[in-house]
Image (spheres, helix red, strand yellow):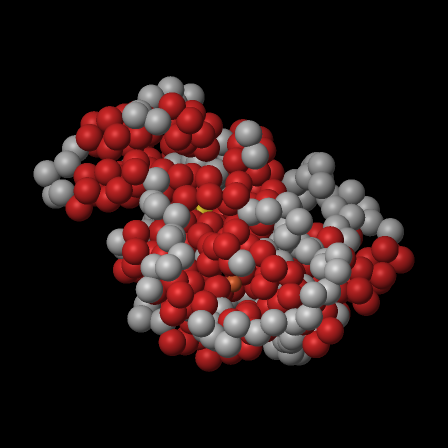
Length: 407
Ligand SMILES: [Fe+2]
Ligand SMILES: [Fe+2]
C-alpha cells in the first residue's frame, strides 16, 4: 500500500482509500480498479495523489530510512510537549506516532528556546483582565480589514453577483492576484492546466473557494507586523498554513461540503495572538516566561494574565470586520469545540491545530500540544485511519504553499 502521484497512476491499480474532491464528493470508492477515465477525473478535480493497494514499486523521496536511535530520541523528547494530553487516547496515540515519524524524518527539533525570551525581567505585571475592555472601548485601534476583503464581502453577499464581479475586485490588487494565481496553480489544487486569470480560477474552483483564499491571503499580510523579538513570523505563518491545510483535508475526509471555510479558519485560528504580539509585546514576553516556569498551556496563561485569551481577542476582531459567523465560531472555539455553535467544523480546526503542533510545522508560541476535547472528538465520528494519509497529503501541499506565502 502506498501513495502514488496522479501522474504516475497506471490502469489496473486498486484504490486503498476512497478518493474525494475538495468538496468531499466521492470520485472513486476504495477497492475499485483505476481506469484511464478515472485518472482524467482525478486530474480535473485536482487530486494530486491517491493511496494504492500492493507494492507500488517506488518510494516517496521523503520515505528514506530513519535511524532507529533518532526515532527513539524524538519519541522521548516530544513526550514532554504531549504532556497535556492522554497518550493512551487512540486519536492522540496516532497523532503522537505520526509526529515522531515526521519530526525524525525532517530533523525537527523543539523550538521552545527560540520563542521570545525576555532579555531582562522587569517584574511580571498582570494587567488584571483589562485588555479586552481596552480593546472593546476602542482605546486600542484594531487593524482595519484590508479594503479588498470589505469589497469582496459585499460582492459575495449580493446574490446577483457573477464570477466576473469577484475577479474584478481581486484584480484591483496585483499582489493579491499574483499570490492567488500561484496558489491555484500549486499542489493544493493540482489543476491539470495552467490558470492565468482570476476569472478562470473562479469558474474552475468556485466563488466561495476564491473568496476564502483572497480573504486568507489579505489577512495573513498582517502577520508581517509581528515583532521578530517575540516570534519568527515565518514560523507563525507555517503554523497557520499547516493548520489550514490539515483542516481542509480532514474536512474532505469528513465529507463536509465547504472545505474552503476550514482552510481559512485554520489559517486565521491564532490571529488573536498576532494582535497580542503586535500591541502587547511586553505582556506577551511575560506570558512566555510564565509558561516556561509553570509548564502551563499558553492560552491558559493568557487567560490568567490578561483575563482573556487569544480566542476572545480574535472574536472581537472578526466581529469588527464583519466576517462570516461560521468563521468566527470555528476560530473562537478552536480550543473548546464542544461549545461551538457549529461543533463539527470547530472540532476539525481543533484537531488540525493539535496535529500541526505535534508535527512541529512552525509555531504560534505554544510550547505544548493543546489538549484534545474528547467529547468533541467522539461527536465528530472521524476514523483515526485517515490521519496518516491526511498528514501525507498535507505535507505535500504544505511545502508548495509555504514557498508561495513567503514570497
Ligand atoms: Fe490557539
Ligand atoms: Fe494554533
